[in-house]
Amino acid sequence: MKKLLVFQHVAHELLGTLNPLLKRAGFRIRYVNFARYPDAQPSLYGYAGLIVLGGPMSVNDTNRLPHLITELKVIEDALRREIPVLGICLGAQLIAKTLGADVYPNREKEIGWYDVSPTQEAFSDPLLMELQKTEKIFQWHGETFDIPKSTSHLAFSSLCANQAFRYGTKVYGFQFHMEVDAPMIHRWLRVAENRQEISRLRGADYLERIDNETPEHMARLTELSERVFGEFINLFGIEKRYLRLPTR
Image 1 (cartoon, rainbow, N blue to C red):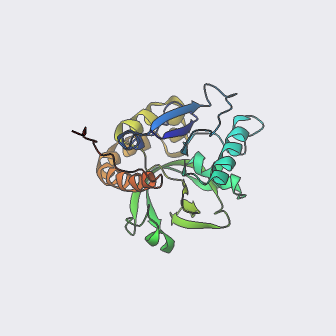
Image 2 (spheres, helix red, strand yellow):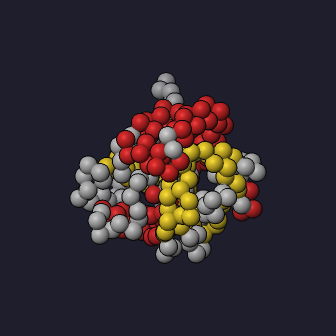
Image 3 (tube, one colour):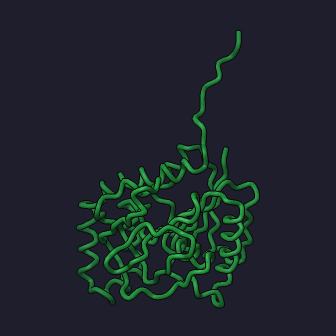
């Protein structure tokens, strides 16, 4: 059974649609919750891959949140080991910073459903090659990153040019949240800090707008997530299991 390490930063940001796919593939998953255990010192020893989830903090908050330095070091180790790594939102920003790119405030916060488009390079990428010209994908971020050197730029939106990249063949950074399902979005909208942020930026009616748009776009996002994350799981080289019958 392959073991997977997952970095978590807030209680309501989980693996989402990734979780059943990983369980079905036979992974044993270990969460490291830095909100609860900020002094944790995880190691990649014995783990086949790493997933770094999102969070409201900035990658540049290392003085206030020293666990971010711990995460950067583990990501650097994962890159050396050449194991599969997936970063989502903050996770993508941490990978970008590990690779030497700058992370900084985006010109506008993306919160809700936005059009995301693949670049030309995405059409030959095993994870994102099925993306159409535009796809509605859920977003919740205020910062962005430069595309690191020696990586492939895979997706963009009108408000955020750098939505996805690939380093080598096994490391991906996604600014968007392809892992969300409807219950997860509704949980995010019930978090007091999130509601306050939306009301301050867009007005209280925007909460209702996200609620109304979610059923419209969720079926396609779920289809995409199963395809994209299924291909990510294939990076681990998991072989099909066969039932071995007893010899006579």
